[in-house]
Length: 168
Image (cartoon, rainbow, N blue to C red; front, side, top):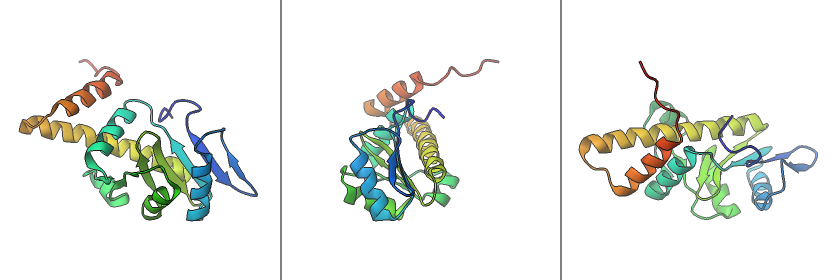
């Protein structure tokens, strides 16, 4: 779906045995999360651009949680936890209270109680919520004259990865 580069995501699913979509240094983290949370699937998706720049920027600025203000995200997610360390305990604590979280430098983590589809929907929703929040915050800061250099840089990088706007 373009949320991460082909083959970059790690999917871990438990059926008769625990299986992984690919070898990864994050397999132990995913396995521990499945065990601690009692779920059937965990996905770690390193986001593709512009989502990577956007989520890294928001995570650095808003930790311990990204708080989107759009109605849909506030209703269904409330916030997106930013996991402060790449430990199973920290990730499990975040995912015990939310369906998805962001692990800086690694990606979006999500779980599905029964299927990978549940985790995929959460990954997509986290990426979308971050996208909307980033650009809404940028517009608000620009209108208020409160843009800083870091926001300008993140904006320029994110926009460079978007298709050109439609012409009339």
